Image (cartoon, rainbow, N blue to C red; front, side, top):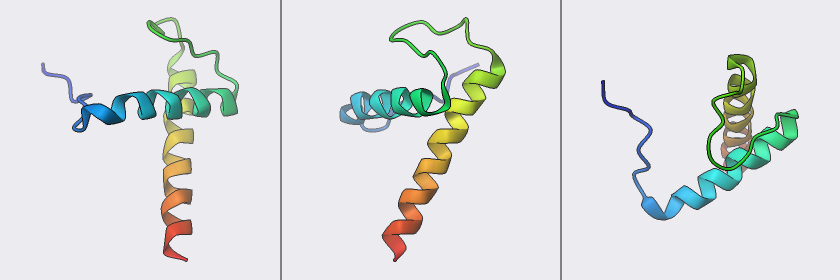
Length: 64
């Protein structure tokens, strides 16, 4: 099975990593650089959820 986690714009990889670290910090998940396979599904999901929430807020504020 092929992964769909490819970044379309390679220059965006660093920005996405920073965004992910900020989201993890906001929800209190101890995310570190590199391997994070020791996170629970709940922790990983809360990071992703926070990222989506922030993206939606950013989009909504751009509409105003």
